[in-house]
Image 1 (cartoon, rainbow, N blue to C red):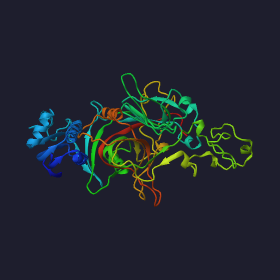
Image 2: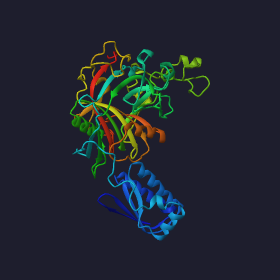
Image 3: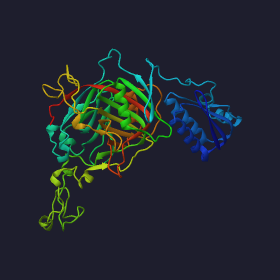
Image 4: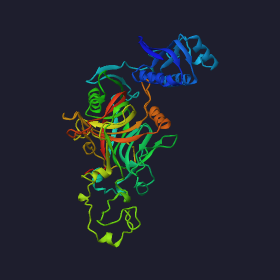
Length: 489
C-alpha cells in the first residue's frame, strides 16, 4: 500500500493506493493518527486506487470517523473505486463514509463571541479567547485559600488537626497532599498527591498501589478530599488559549506557558489548567503516606533476620532477642524524609522526561511575586459563610507552596505549583472546550496512568529540566484574593 498527502486550503487529502488488508491496516491507522495529532481535523481519503478492503481495513475507517467526529472534525471518502463502493455498500457503510459534502464544514467550530488574539512565543503560536462569564467582567478570577502546614511533610508530623475535609464542586480547583476518606485516621495510609478541577478530583494513594483513584460530581454527589495542605481556589476562568509548538521544536516548556499566561492576563498571580499532548513530564510523587504508621522508619539491626523471616517484623512486631540487642544500622538524620539517603525511599523522581505522546491534565497556581500578598480579601471566604478558615481571615502569600519555574541555568520566569494526571493520548477538538465536561469524560473513558507533582530538575549534568507540551488548551484567570487558613507558619 502507498500513502501520500496533499494539503488543501481547509482540509488534508490522503491518497491510498493498493490493498487495505490486515497487514496494512495499522499503517493507515498510524497515518491518520499522525495527521490528527498534527492538527488536521478535516480529512478526505481518496480511494480511487484502492483495490481491496478487508474487515480490518473497514474497522480503521470506522474508528477514524468516530474519533475525528468527536473533535468536531470531518472524515469521508472521495472518489471510491468500484471495489470500495461495493465493499461499503455490502457492509451498510456507504451513507456513513461516502459523502458528497461533510456533515461538519471545514473550519467549523463552536462560535466564539469575541475575536481571538493571536500571538507567538519562542516555541509556540497562540490563539487566545476571552471566556469571562457573562456579567463578571472586571471581577472574574479566583479567590484562593492557602491550607495546612507543608513544612510538616519533612518530619512526618501531621496530626488530625492539620487535616480538613474539603469539597470540590465544579467552580473550584485544588491541589496538594490529600486522600479520599471519611476521616484523617481512616485516610492515614493513603495520603498522596491530589488535584481537583471542574467537579472531578483524583488522588494517588500513598499506600503502594500506584493506582490513581478519582471521584466525579454526579447530581448532589461532590468530590471530597481529606486535605493536609495545598491550595483551594474558587472562581471562574477568564481566558482559553490554544497553543501549537512550532516546527523543529520538541515541545513548549511549562515555564514558557506560565510566562505567556501571566503576560496575557497582565497579573502577578494566576490559576492555570492545561490539557495538552505531552512531549515529556518531569515530576515526583510520594511513595508512602507521610502519616501512615507503617511508613515510620524501623531500625535495622546488625544480625537481625530479614523481614520475611518469622522472628523479625518490619511493621514493629516481634523481634528476636539477638536483634534487639544488636547495634542500630539505620540513622534517621533527624527524621527528615527529604534528606539523603532516605529521600529515595519516600519520593519517586523522574530521572528523565517521561510520558511522551500522552495527554496530560495539569492544574496549578503561578506567581511572579510569590512573597507578595494577593488582593485584600473582601466579603465571604471562597467557600462562603461557615468555611473552616480563621475567624478573621487575612491576606496570605503563596510562597510556602510555590517553587521556581524556568529553564535550567536561567533565572526563574515565575514560581508555581502544578500537579498533573496522565492519560492515553486522544485528540482535542478545535475552538472552545467545555473544561468540566472534557475532564469528566477523560476520567470516565480512560484510566489515569500517573499523577505527578511537576518539578524543575536543574541538577548539573544529570537534571531532566522541565516538563514540555506539544499542543493543547490552557485555561487561566487572575487570582483576586489569597486567604490564610490560620495555620500559616
